[in-house]
Image (cartoon, rainbow, N blue to C red; front, top):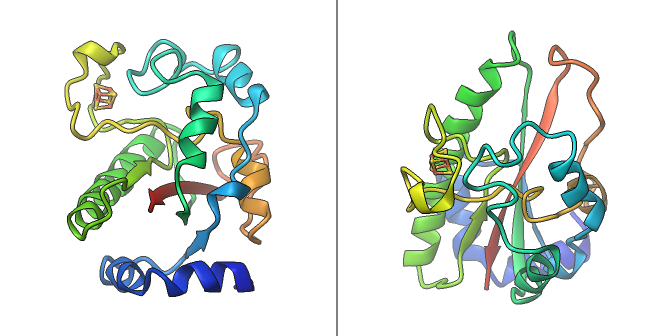
Amino acid sequence: MNTESNLIESNYRDLKKLFQKYGYKDFKFIDPEKIVVSQWVRMKCMYGCGEYGQNASCPPNVPSVSECERFFREYSAAVVFHFDKKVEQPEDRHAWSSKVNMKLVKLEREVFLAGYERAFLLYMDSCCICSECSKERENCKEPRLARPSPEAMAMDVFTTVRQFGFPIEVRTDYSQQMDRYAFLMIE
Ligand code: SF4
């Protein structure tokens, strides 16, 4: 781990223990200044992604790119959680994502209750808590659990996580291992 991550982590030893209690091993504390926000990410959502307009936590149901950038700058620390998986069928990805994200959102609540009032989670995939998404924010079936993904918040996840030595590559089919990342913003 680099010195900067060590320094940030030293301010959040209580949280590190909590993450370990949840069974997480592959995570790093980072400076949110290093989170890269890019317009191209939003363009990829708008053109080419089947979730656009079909998920109540994805664009266009999210803040503008500049508002996303402002949001990240309001935090002094963030935690990146790495998850990897191979799936038999592409559609198996949703059940895995839902399980991982449900556990993460419980952790976010514990972090909040520990006194970190700004705790906010970005799911490791688009919100797939419900088997069928309402598609519109105002009709969200689980508004307390809905969270955007880092990509929905215009984060360039590739550039961001590579700075910390995490693996990430474009995958050409679902039989290859996926590397996914969730972010927990803390203050
Ligand atoms: S909680 Fe359910 S309805 Fe709301 S955004 Fe997530 S999947 Fe869609």
